[in-house]
Image 1: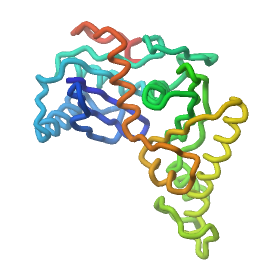
Image 2: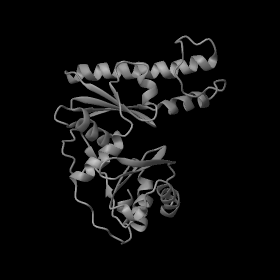
Image 3: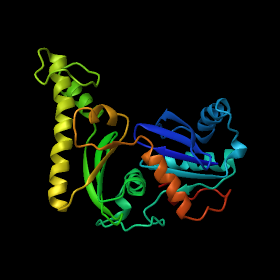
Image 4: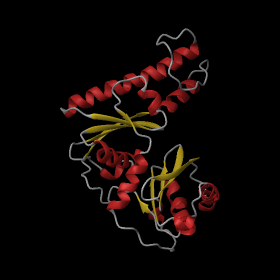
Length: 269
């Protein structure tokens, strides 16, 4: 079985693929100080509840945009699953060109999303990921990664409103029934929800104009289904696209050789 870790700024998602389908997935808050043993207590317990033993794991992939978390996740794979994980980097064999100024600066999740989206839906396309940041990634007809857009995430915007304005409360995310709010909370919910719908529609329109060709639009991330309700621009919502990118990347690269040596400082970057 393939064990994958998608470590984002907010959560770490672990999942297991049995060669045919995703057997299970689990989520824990991202904490760069969490040790390999702490991860193991969490993960091995949940795997057992899902009927999966750690001895069944034969390969692993780690993708993270939090460099400080890499050391402990790598240690987890080595010490508890006896596998050397494939670390998602721009230097791996992706099967497509990364046509940006500095490929090493592109987040692992953005490349993984692009890989899986093109495999599933063809191209050209835009992948919108509603995460800690809201990202738009543009993929060419041939699968090449062409660049994208990074905007503040929805929850970051909600928190910023609450912290910067003394009289504005912290609100939950939801689709308001009307655009014009008749109280403070309704007005804030409208500004966040319909503001991000406008952001999506406006940026996709500009991307299409600049690219000069029709583009499929795929959305992922926890808030993708909610935002997709408010716009016809989003064609597909795919919650597993990052995990699927890890599976595809593992199939295109050699399985790393297990090493029990101490991880060098450079490897923890």
